[in-house]
Amino acid sequence: GFLHYMVDNCEFNSSKLNDIEYIYSHYYNKLEYIRFSSSVGKFVGYTEVGIKNAERLNNGPEVITRRAQKERVCFHNVGVFTESALTKS
Image 1 (cartoon, rainbow, N blue to C red):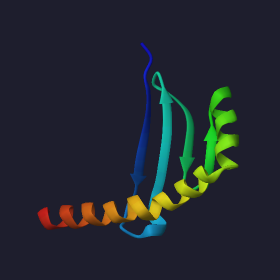
Image 2 (tube, rainbow, N blue to C red):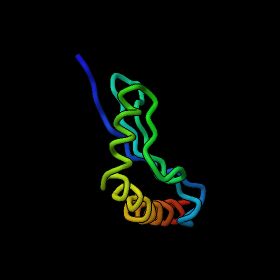
Image 3 (cartoon, rainbow, N blue to C red):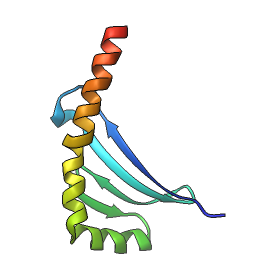
C-alpha cells in the first residue's frame, strides 16, 4: 500500500515567538516531498511533484494561511507546554 501523511511541527528553544519555527511537511511513503517553513515563509518542494505543488501553493491562499499558523498554533501551544514543564521540574 501507499502512505500519505502531513506533519505540523513547532521547534523552539524558548517561549519567545521569534525563536519558534513552524514546519508543515507532506510525506509520501516516508519521503518528504514538500515543506512549509516559517523561517523561509513559503512552500519548498523536494521532488518533481513537490516543486510543482510548491509553485501552486505559493501563488494561492494556502501560503498566507500557513504563515499565520506559527502564531495561532505554535505560540499558544509552546506557552502551554513550557508552563506545564516548568511547574513539574
